[in-house]
Length: 385
Image (cartoon, rainbow, N blue to C red; front, side, top):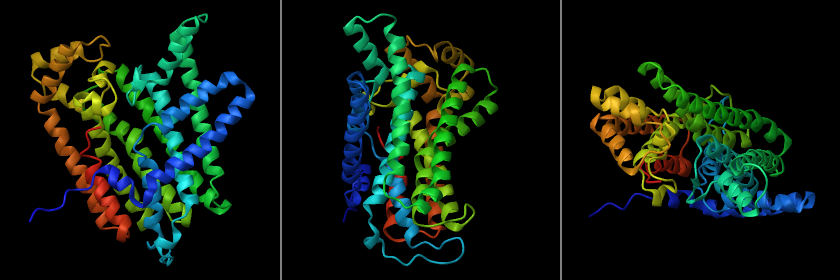
C-alpha cells in the first residue's frame, strides 16, 4: 500500500477556508481605502490600485496563516501561570482574528514594494514591480524629469501607505483594547525587525570584502531578521497574544520562538536557493536575480569560501554585475554547485526543519494546530517558488 501524498502548501493554507477568508477581508478593507485615496484626489487612484493589485493578485498568505494557527494553538495551551484555556477551538473560529491576521499582508506588501526599489528588481510575482509600473506611466505620459526617479518615489510612498493601512486594519479588526495592547509590542517588533533585516541585506551587498566567518554570521543575522522573525515567529506570537497574556519565557511563546526562528531560517535558505536556481515561471522573478544584485546570502558566501582559487576568482569577477548574461549565470551556478555550497545549504535546511519540529514536539501545542505547523515546516521548505 502506498502512503498518501504529502499535503501541498496551498492545501494547508486553505484549511478552514483561511485563504479565502483572508482574501475577502483584504478586498473589503482595500476597497474602502481606495475610495479614501480617491476622495483626496483622483490622481491617487492609480497608486491605490497598484497596492491593491500587489496584495490581491498573489502571495502565499503565510503570515496570516501563522497568526491564525498561533492563535488556535494558544487556545488549549498551558499559559505562563500554569492555567489552561478551556474554550474549544472549533467554537472560537473568530472572523475578528482572521481580519487582524490579514493585516500582516499589508505589512508584507509595504516591505516588498520597498524591497524591489532597493534591489532594483524589475518584476514581482510575474508582473512589473511597482516602481517600474510608475516609471512606465511617466514615460507614456511624457512627464518632465527622469522616469526612474519618479517610479522610485511613488514606490516609497506606496510602501508607506501599505504600512499605514496595515496598522489601521489591525486597529479596526474588532479586537478589544486589552488584546490590542497585548499584540502591539509583537506587531511593532515585527515591523522593526524586518526593516533591520532589509538594512543588513543592503549592507551585505555593498561590502563583499568581509572575512568569510564574519560574512557568514552576518548572513545568518540577515536571514533571522529579514525572514525568520517576520514570517513565522512574530506572526505566531501575535496570534497567541490575541487570546490572552503569555510571558516571553513561558512555554507557549518559547515554543513559537524556537520553532519560528528555525523554520524561518530554513524558509529563507530555500528562498536563497530559488533566487539562484529557481524557475522564473514558478518564482515570478528573472533567473539569477540574486546573483545580479550581489546578495551576500549564506549560499553565496559558502560558495566563495569553498571554491577553488580559480573558481573563486571567476565568482568574484561576476557576482553583483547587473549585466550578467545567461552564460554568466550558468557559470556562477556551476561554481556554487561544484564548491559543495548548494549541498551544504540543503543539509542546513533539513537541520533547521528538524529543529523546528523538535521544538514543536517538546512544547504545549497539540491537536490540529500542531498537525498544521508540523506539515507547514516540511512543505514550505520543499517549495519551488
